[in-house]
Structures are given as C-alpha cells and as structure tokens.
Length: 419
DNA sequence: TCTGGGGTCCTAGGACCC
DNA sequence: TCTGGGGTCCTAGGACCC
Image (cartoon, rainbow, N blue to C red; front, side, top):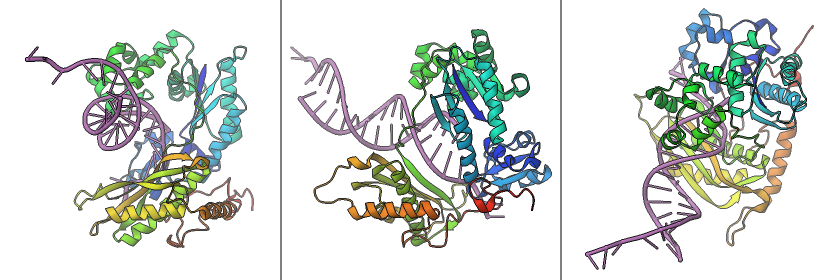
C-alpha cells in the first residue's frame, strides 16, 4: 500500500494555527505582490472565490463575506510543513515529500500492521501536534492513493479523513465517481480531448484501449492508466538535485530604464547562484527574460528571452550577474513598460566536477568569497551582504499588506498569550 | 491601479553520424 | 532502371504538477 497524505487547504490552515478565532471563517492567501488567490479555506470556496482569482477583482466579494485576506507567509508555511513531514518520517522510512503540503509513504511490507488504524492515528497526531488538518488516501499505486485522498477530502465525516482503496469494488466505485479532469496527470488540454470522445470519468479512461492511449496521448498517460487499474508503475522517488533553478518576479510597478531592470537581473542572478551553491551545483548556461504586462492588451507589448552559454561552469553570484547583464543588454529595448523579469539557470554539473577550460575559468577567489557571503547571510539574515550593483535598501519590495507574523521562526514575532 | 512563482517530462523534427 | 538501414543528439514546444 502507498499512502498519500495531503494537508487540507494548507496555507489557509497555517494561518489558523495561531489564530483559532478564524476557525469556520473564510480565509484566502494571496500570491506575491498580493496579486491573486493561491489558497482558500473551505468557507472561502463556498462563497465562490475561485483559485487564481485576481484580488482586486474580488475585493467586493471579500468585503461582502468578511473574507480574511492574507499575504503569503512562506516562512510560516515552510516551517509548519517541516513539522508535518518530521512526524510522518517517524511512521515510515520510505517517504517522498512531493510538495510543501503532500507526501507519499510506502507501506509495502507493513503486512502485520493494521493500516486503517495507523492511518487514523497519523491524521490525528499531525493535527494535534501541528494544528494542521490532513487527509490520507491508501491504495496499491501512487495514482490510486491520490484518488483515495480525494475521496477522504470530499467526505471527511464518513471517512474520518482517511480512505482506503483495498478492493476492486472500491477502486471502481471511486473511479466512476472521479471526473477525468481530476485525475493526477490529466490537465485541461487532455480532459478536453477525452471529453470530446465521450470519456468523462476516470473509470471510462481506464476502459480505453492501450494502443489508443499510447498513440493519441503518450507513454505518460499509458502509465497513468495502468496505475489506475491497480498496476504500480511509479515508485517513491528520492530527492534529486534540481535540473533548472529560477528566480523570477513581477514588479510592483512598471520599469522603463535599463538600470532598473539591470538591478533586478543582478539580484535574481545572485539568488540563483545561492540556490545553486545550496545543492552544490554549477550551471553552464542561463536564460534571461523580460516582458511587459500581458494583461494590458492596449499597451505596446514586448517579450523576449535569451539563453547564453557560459564560457565556464559557475555558481558565483558575481559571474552569473555579469553574464546575465550582458544578455540583458542584448534583449533590452527602450520605450516599453516592463512588468516582469527572471533568470533561469540550466545545464548543471556538480561543483566538484567542473571541467576546466584552457583559456578562461571561473575566478577561484569567488569560491571563498561566496562561502563567506553565504555564511554571513545565514547567520544574520538573508541578503545582508549584497553586490554593489544591487539595491541596498530593498529586500523584495513586494506588496505584502496582509502579512501574518512569523510565529514560529522569528523570536520577535512569537505569539503573546498574556501580556 | 491592481493578474504568482517554481518545477518536470515527453515528443517531433532536424541535423548529424556510420 | 534501380537510391538503405540504423543510430544519436539537440531543440522547441506542449503538456503536466504544486
């Protein structure tokens, strides 16, 4: 049996942990710059706030239903996520942290355990110890565990937040209930295609011939079909080094000059370099992109990206910033209102296996310098040491008007019980 | 006025090799 | 008159996930 544990409305639930007065009340959490809705409590879903809703368009609805609005507080969510995962790791050695609020557990071989009982125990303990409510689905494949999890979420009372698919009857019942677009791995495009040929439920999808799925779709969907039929095709995956790393942001206002964009590009490069060093990789190419606000159709639009191959592998913020700036120079055009920019670093190699070049190499002094900078920033706070070409005063100048305290990671913001 | 950020995998087609 | 068969690597684009 595989289990999938998923935290219910995770970000919204995090906001409730230290604010029990918000239980039963609608909550939404907004993206960076307080742009759009990225999480909703059940009550917020019930009053009709859709996922991804632009906050400014829904202000009236928020007011009308007294929706509690929060800016994303990733320090809090990350810390609570870690606590949840720590508890899970005490139950099962084979675990895959699939996202900030989800984990697969491999219970194959737990033959003498009463898994239904264990599942309930896990759900209760996580809730009790962290304040985060969770749902758990058990089944013979990861994809079916996802399905089971959905059932548990949809029927919390009947299932006590834990659902088992342990017979063919239950499997078929769940698949007949599940809409095809709700299958893990079937998105908007594929469900449109499937609906067009009369396939509306997960069960109907499993009845398609293999060759059809393989030809009309791809091996991924064929794997999915087998998984839904109860044949495990996916295993628990070990945490792997990333193959791409990105730092991209929308700006709080439009930028016009090269210098404004350059500062952002340098800062994003420094951030990518830090992330590279954290996983002990160097990159050998990088992409810079800039674009105007695509939502403002009446404005002149401009959008370009450029990929540059580096002459040598590097994870030095100084070097990446230098190459990124050269790239920016090649794509920047005057006369546009820029809304977003980003850096994506690609083509990695391990930092201790860098192929040296005969003529041009990464400055060896940077290694020591970066280590020192990382050390200082780790000790006294992010971005305390920066490059001269970065804006000294700003951290991420983001609009975050509804930010909750960092209850668990910042001593000065700890909750006061009685003052 | 205001619309997020960060990832992965697969396929088809072109260029090239012997 | 007749024009093979088997590969690899790379890229862009499209799909998906949270």
